[in-house]
Length: 158
Image (cartoon, rainbow, N blue to C red):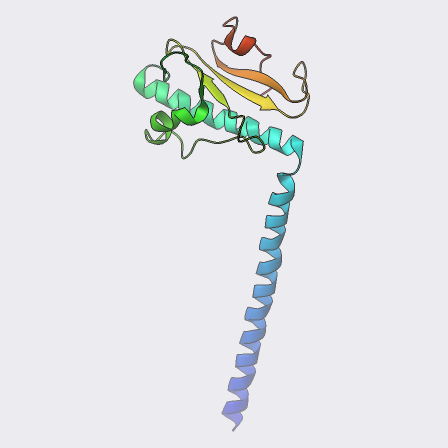
């Protein structure tokens, strides 16, 4: 009989420990979910995410250039949605996936390279930054100065 009471006590202790761990885990992951959800509601956070997207796309393009000796070139009109780089960058193993704008899926990031030596990426930012107005476009890439691409918007601040 003493063994039964001891086994029940150990079982209760184990259940309390597992239950406590479950409660802590639920609050921890719930907090992460809430913070992630809240983060996507903030224009500044979305602009920071766009900057991260730009850096990851640029890194993949540099890896592609290092392996192939040129940046991807598309036939005229040259200006394509960044998603068009999927075959070159994702299937080539240079990036896991092509990022998309967190707010405007109907206004994708754009890419252009006419000669494979230079390229440009066009982004739209929500908040005004420097000489970029709110909801304005900016350009980043290699050799983009005086190209006239997209009407030569200001350089991106990232």
